[in-house]
Length: 283
Image 1 (cartoon, rainbow, N blue to C red):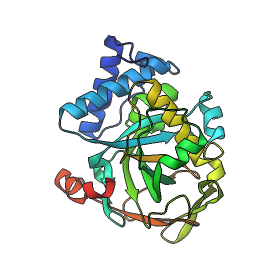
Image 2 (image 1 turned 90 degrees about the vertical axis):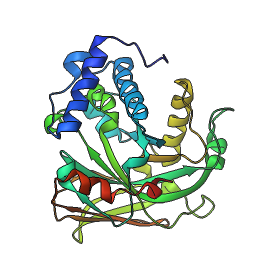
Image 3 (image 1 turned 45 degrees about the vertical axis):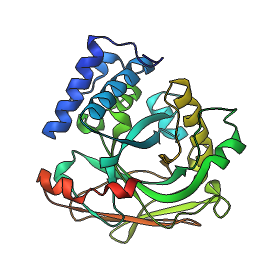
């Protein structure tokens, strides 16, 4: 086990609770009664167990997501660091696709910058120059977050255990190399039905989305699972997340980068949920 893996019955019980909520699409009580609200090792141990089960069922990892990049949110949860979750191929949604809200529990949308890596981040100093050089290109992205925990009643431990409260992600266009785009200078506007519902900028993401990527690269290497070429990294929200409901159409514009959109429709048919997924969107 890596340094985030203490093991124990409580970890297995927390994982089972979250799996049941996802399978039944019924939010569950927080898992902090089992693993604590701020036990970093226990929380990541739950996430690692859930990841292992998903891989055993045929899942394929396509990258990572970074969360808690806003200082205000960190203060709210009483933490001084971001967190991360794992992206899988079946979480990728095509740009402009329609998502059945019934297949989710309590979804929210946030706009982000996605980095696609052109080189491994497993060796070397992992300094700013190496991080920048490792990025093949950046893309506008939406993350659809969705807590398995009722009412989003989460602490740091709850959200980490729940794979960073992740659900789906959408990659937009175009793909731009960092020679053409400076993430920290980007401004973001997110609309719902044409109305502006969230705004932000690159500096809202740990001061610079590339700083968030550097934090993840070092953390991933420390826990024995470094970032690899070809993986997608969602660098963290550029502005506040917004609840999603059937009929909503979200579109994000990120200056210097491009646009991305997603729709939500009313359906609880699991077959419908599978049909809209586009594995190519996460490649």
